Every structure is written in structure tokens, then in C-alpha cells.
Image (cartoon, rainbow, N blue to C red; front, side, top):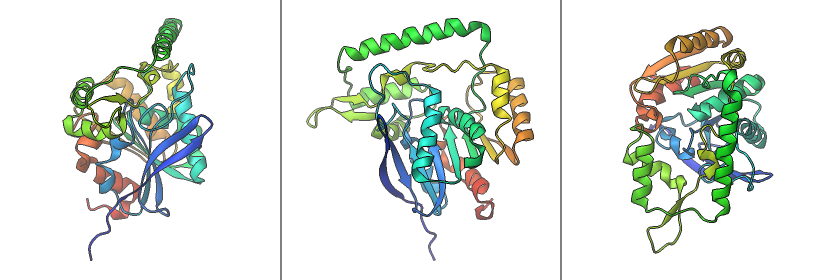
Amino acid sequence: MAEERFTFTEELHIPTPWGYLAAKVWGPDNGVPVLALHGWQDNAGSFDTLAPLLPANVRLVCLDFCGHGLSSHYPPGMFLNYYDHVYHVKLVIDFFKWKKVSILAHSMGAITAIFFVSMFPELVDKFISLDAVKQLSSSAEYLPARMKSILNHFQEVCQRLEQGPLSTVSYEEARDKLVKNYGGSIDEKDADILLIRGLRKIKEDSDEYEFTRDLRSTIRPYIFNDFTTEQLKAVARGIVCPFLLIKAKNTSMFEPKELYREFYDLYRDASEDFRYVEVDGKHHVHLSQPELVAPIITNFLFPTKSKL
């Protein structure tokens, strides 16, 4: 008997006070709920190659964060930050009326999830982080200067948006820009997948496109995320559910290895089952080489399904 395949089910709009959060849903309605959260400037398509490799009894909801992909943008003049993303995760869970959900998250999505899992441990069954150890630590002494820089950048972006439609690009230009900006983490094939939700065609009879993302999401950091190491350690101690951290070997290290080790120890002490696994590949390994991470994820979610 042929093995049942995991298939794409539907596009979904989750209503919010400012519009909706778009989601790409895979698997049966009665499947085990897993919420997938993408990285900065990515979208729900980030999981398109990984999803078909997951067990067929999973209900995988791949979210477009606000200001990303096909989700609604905030009204003009509003600031977009990590706190909002954490709140949006709660809105999605409430919408589906999940009593428990596992979270599969990459990069910025994983940082958002770290905060959510720590804040709402009663709602999370298992947590999988793809190539994100922790939020970057920040020195308290630099907080005023960093906040000033972020606010100035935000004001510049708002003024740019008030000037009218942003400039258009050809598809080739958009793809080249994406590959270049990701510094080798994705190739043209991966870019094509992300651009399905990342580009909007202006005219049907021309090669003119605009990016779907909210320009406010390009402010980096586009939030007040200046947490000290001690504050982040307090967050880490709140992750008590089973926690799988998959780290890509060929990716940048933004902080000392010693600090990462401290957090691995914190996760190990707090979580009832902390696992750390390294895989060959770059930051978007789940998109470019999903076959490397899919068995590890499956084994973590459903140990009896593993063929390892």
C-alpha cells in the first residue's frame, strides 16, 4: 500500500482588527497542529519544500507575518515590532482554538517563538527552532542611541510611503536582488519560491512588479528589541516544553560561542527534552535542502515515525 502523502490544502485569511493574516495550510483538518513561522523578509513559502516531507497526519499552518507575504499591512504611521509578532501568534492560536500547538520556526520567526513559548508555556506542545539560538544581546548603555536611530529610520520610511507608490522592478531584477541580499543563503530556485508570495504583478501585459512586503519591515532592527543578556536568560528559563534546536553549520555567528553555550545549558536545564542538532547547509537549509532537516523534525514530533 502506497504511503499517504502530505499535501497542500488551502490559502487562509485569519481576520484581525487591521485586516488579516494570510496563511498557507497543509494537511487534514484533524491533523496534529503545527504552526510554522518564517524568517525576516521571508514568507509562508519558506516552508514549501519542507512541508511535503513531513508526516501526513500533520496540520501545518504556515503564517505570513504582518507586513510580509500576502498578509495585510498595518495602517499608515503605525510601528511594527516583535511584540506585535508575538501577539499575532496568539491571535492565530486563538483563531484555530488550539489547546496545544507545536511551533516550527526559522530565524526571526524562531526568535518570536522563543518569546511566545516562554510567555505561554501552557499553549505549546513542542518547539523547533531552525538556525536561531537567541535574540542578539544588547548593552543597556547604548539603548538611547539605538532607539533614536530606529525612530529616525522609521520616520524616513513613513515619509517615503507618503510619497506614493514605490518603484517597480522586473522579475529578473527582483530575483537577483533577493539572492544578493541573502548573501548566498538561497539560490535562484529558492528565490523563485519566496517571490510567489513576495511579488505582486502591476500589469498583466508587462514585466512590472512590486514587493508585497511592508517597507516598515525593512527597518533593521525594526523594533525596540534591546534586551540585555540577563533579560534574555530569563526568557530562556521559561522554555519548559520539548525543544529541538537545529543549527546550520555554514552560517554566520553573530555572538561568541561561549554565550551560545550558556544558552544551550539554560535550555537544557529548563526544557523537559532539549536537543541540539547540527546539519550541513546554510541559513535557509530548510528551504534549500529540506531532506536534511525533515527526518530530524519528524523524529522529534513523532518518535515512532522515525526511520532513522
